[in-house]
Length: 417
Image 1 (cartoon, one colour):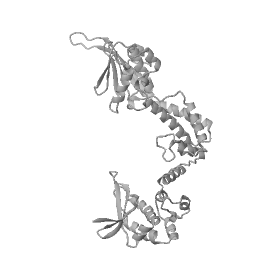
Image 2 (cartoon, rainbow, N blue to C red; image 1 turned 90 degrees about the vertical axis):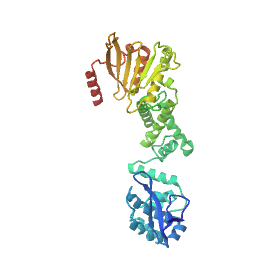
Image 3 (cartoon, rainbow, N blue to C red; image 1 turned 180 degrees about the vertical axis):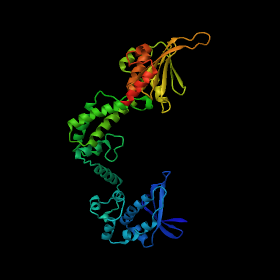
Image 4 (cartoon, one colour; image 1 turned 30 degrees about the horizontal axis):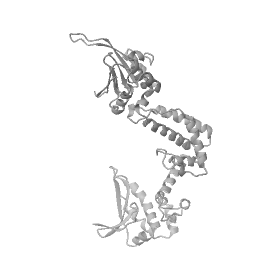
C-alpha cells in the first residue's frame, strides 16, 4: 500500500511516500522503451523527512543529485538505490560548506536548480546551497540555450540576442519565427527593425511557390533556398558584425512569412502566371482532360469549368501525391495525346497517338518521348504548356528523347553530377 506523506505544488519535485510502512522518496525521470515516464523510489530515514518538508533548497539539491542516477538507469535498468541512499545525509544533513564540496565531486543536474531560482554566478563558483524558492523555468531554458551556444563557440552581441528575442528563437532555434517587438529592449528595437528592413528590401518581389508533389501545403524548397541566400547576403553585407545565428533567424523569419503567404493564396493564383491566365483561361481549351495517378484514381476537367485546368491538376496532385504515388498523367483523349509526370525521377514523358486502333482488335500505335525536368518550376511550365497547346507546345520545353535507353543514361548522368 502506498500513501503520500509530503508533496509540493510542483508535480515534478520528488514526493515522500510511505510504502508498506517504509518512508521513500519517489520521483519521475526519463522514459521507458515505449516513451512512457519512468518512476523511481528509494528509501529515506525519518530524520530526512523534516528537512525535505521545511527546506526547499535542500529538497531541490537532493533532486538535482539523484537525477543523474535515474538517467544512468536508462529505459529499463534499475536505479542504484545504494548510491541514492548514500546521498541523503551529505545533501540533507551536512553543513553548507560540506554540501558545496560534495557537489564538486558528483554529477548533478544544474538545470533543476536554475529552474527554481538558483543564482547562476554562485553555482558557477561552486556555492550550490544558493538555491532559492522562486521557480523560473524560462531562466533555466535561457541557461541551457546559452550553454549550448558556448559549446558551439557562439558568442552573441546585444543586437544578435535582440534579433533572436524578436523572432522568438532565443531559447529554441527550431521554433517557427514570429515578430515579437515587446520581447526586445526598446533601446535596441530600432536597430532590430533596421536589420529586418534590410532583409525585406533584399527579397522584395521574390516569392516561395507551392510544391504539390509534397502535399497541399508544401512549398518549393528551391524558392526557399534562393530567398534565404539573397537575404543572408544582403544582411551580412549591411551588418557585417552579426553572428551567424542572428543572420539565420532573420532569413528564417522572412522565408517563413513568404511561405505562409503562398499557402494562403488560392491555388488558381498559384498555378499559372497572371498573364497566362488572361491569355489561356479555363475557357481557352476546347477539349476535356483526364487526370490520373499511379493508384488508378481519375479526375475529369471540362472546358466549362470555372477553374483552370492547371489549377485543377495541381490540386489533384496535392491531394493524391505520396511516397508510393509519384506518377501522374494528363490525357486529352480527343486529341489522342498526353503527358506522364514521374516525380520520383524528375522526368516527364509526352505521348502522342500515331495510328488509331482499327477493327479486328489491333492496338493503337503511340510515340513516347522523354525529357528531364528541373524541379517543380519545370513541371509547372510543362503542364501549363501542354494545357495550352498540347504536345506540340512542348517542343520548346526541354530536350525530348524517343529512345528510353538513351534517356535513362542521360538521367543517370544528371543524378551522378
